[in-house]
Length: 221
Image (cartoon, rainbow, N blue to C red; front, top):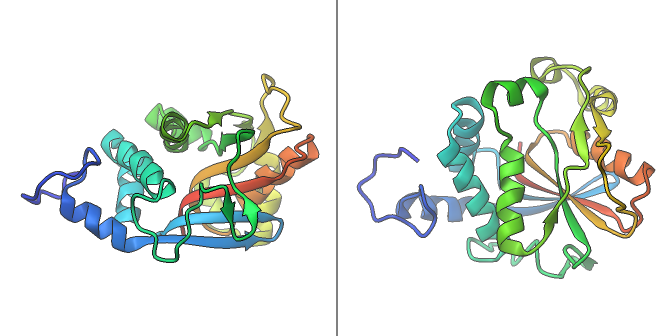
């Protein structure tokens, strides 16, 4: 990852053992109820977790993106940090089912501007890592509308304004399959107000998801 430490490499490619230990200390596994949407956040948006996200998104670092995917899988499998005894991908967490055979991972797509600049989507790479390692399917049901406020404008909005803006920024893809009997797990890199996740969750529920929508984010800010 470029920390330049002369330390032994960790099992996660791109991280030295010291960086991995630092991440393990940062694991949050926080559970939030964002109004209608249950959300599990693996880290706070600070420290090494924040550094990984910023390197991936703003420095176009594919190594950091791969590390984020691998770390997400490691936390979900209970191999990296369990400070509160929470394991998001076990069948039961806080009294409700998180992942079953009918679970579908749905990535929240990045902005069209970011996609054009980078040529790849961090959250799609996260879900790809999860799909390979956790034996769950991924379905890109959510797409970005061409209209909508850009990221710089979003930062200036409060939560209610973001929610209204998010409603117009997302739509369902035309190649969607029947998901009425599927449980949806929205996946995103960073949650700030939760407005984007709620907008995507509401969109799916309005279109026929009957088994519930939950969310998993790498960081919460």
